[in-house]
Image 1 (cartoon, rainbow, N blue to C red):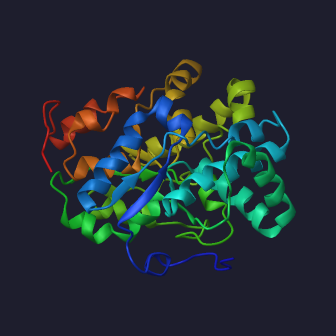
Image 2 (tube, one colour):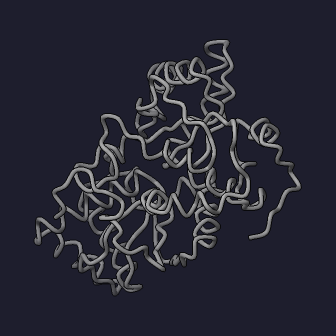
Image 3 (cartoon, rainbow, N blue to C red):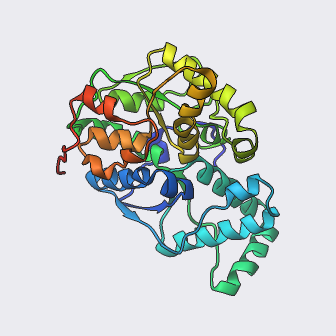
Length: 318
C-alpha cells in the first residue's frame, strides 16, 4: 500500500496511460451528463482512449452511507465492478469523489482482510465474476493535472479575465494516502485554471464541504444544508467568484441546485454557475458547447459564455 500522503503527478503517472477505464457515476449520468461527455472529449483531444462497460453498476456508496444495508453487500458490489475493469486489464478512473472514496475504502478492506475478499468473491462467483485486486483506483482530475502543460498548449478558447474558484470536495481531500495535494491548502485546481488562462480566486470558505451528504441532503436540507451553503456562497460572492468548479457530481448537485432555494430563504441571489473541472477544460480546449451539457445547470452559463465571447452556435472542431 502507498504510504505517502501527497504524491507528485510525475510519480503518480511515470507514463501517461494510453487507455483508461472510466467508471460511470450514477449522479453524474442522471444530473449532469455533460460531465461524463466532457471527460470523453478532453481525453480524445489528449490522445487517451476511454473504455467503459455497460455491465458496471452504481458504486452503492449512497446506500451504504445511509445504512440502507450491511457493508457486506457493498463489498460484493465493489468486487463485481472492479472485476469488470480487471477483465479489460486497465486502471479505474472516477469522476466522482464519492465513487473514488467508496471504491478505495472497500478495496482496501478486501486487500487487508482476505476473508472479506473471499466472502465477496463467493457472492459474485454465482454470476461468473472474480475480483483479484489488480486495478488501481484514480480520479480523472489527477491525469488532467499531470497533463496541465499539454492542456495549456491546446487551449483555443482562453478563459482570460474569468474569475474561477474551486470546490475540491471533502471525499478527495480526506483520502489518507496517494493524493495530489494536502488537504490543508490545496492548489492543483488553481494551477489548472491558470493553465487555461483564467484567474484563480482563493475565497475564504473554498474548502468548506458542500454539506450534501445523503442523509442531511434529504432529511435536513433547510436546517443544516442551506445555512451551510449560504456561508460558502456568501464568501465566494464577496471574493468576486464568477464560476465555481467541482470534481464530484454530488457536490455539483448541492452547489448548483440549491442556489434558488438560498435565494428564497435569504433573499440574496448569488448566481454563480457550478460546473465540473472537466467541463471547464473542455470549454477552453474548444469542445463544442452542445457536447458539454451546460443546459443541465440550474444556474445557467449564459453570462460566462457571453463574457468569454462564446456564442451558442460555436462548435470548434478538434
